[in-house]
Image 1 (tube, rainbow, N blue to C red):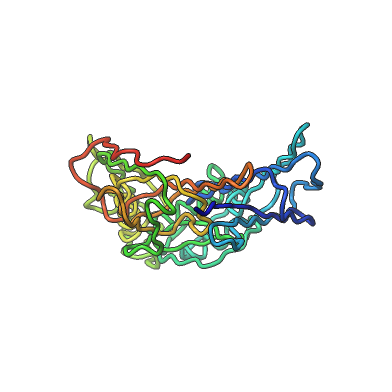
Image 2 (tube, one colour; image 1 turned 90 degrees about the vertical axis):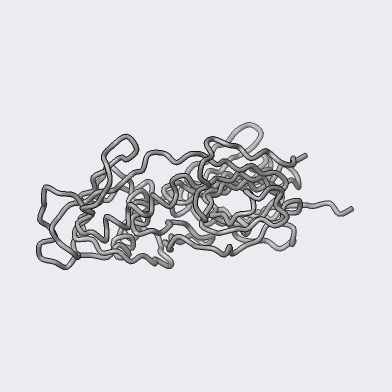
Length: 339
């Protein structure tokens, strides 16, 4: 019988730790969730970390090859009697600490997102969103990361961070899944929640223009966009959004929320699986119930390595095939167990 042995390596500032790390905990999430890493070092291990130092963490899964999963900076250092704990944030943390106040006119969402990231000193990778806005004010009531996540959502896309420290925005994925995880191999425990949809949330704009380049686009009207928007009533909540000045923008925002509302949700406990990240789609093979096979869109990942050779990955995911009708607050079992 083979024994799985997991590990972690880290570079913090000018020091590299290939061994001796007491524990690493990494949390990653789709926007507006913020990514973080907590590195615990024994007292007798040298630790010169200061806020602002660059950090890179790699995890070793069942393949035995280190895989970089986190790149960011040190946010705080806690020095205790028995250990030193280094708290880190990724690119989303830098954006969550920034509040812009800038106004953008006649720009595509992709350009606005790139500009907000540049203001915060964050690098962008692929920004694949297609939505024109007449005017958008990145008010300081929201962080730059919240604005980016909101804009991505309106355009039917997802805001994520990459393993090498970039922010990316990509269209919400469709089946088939990109990664297969097997129940009984990578996955040790899972549960599926299928709940009744909540009242529909409808983003409503206003304006007489048919497109963002129309000279009438900045004007206001007494009606709403789209004109056929349902509600407000018991089952529909209208949320005004001044930036949505065209029918296409308002409809895109409403559809994005509708895809998530009532979708089944998955929680799974796995042996350490470094390659899964928020925004990745997975299919579960040998699933113990039909409801749990997926495909699933991963929304949050927590990796924990240590103490010792122990390693775990916890997943939260959203079904991307639509909600199951007629079921309310049903939990489809907690199956299996981790020792």
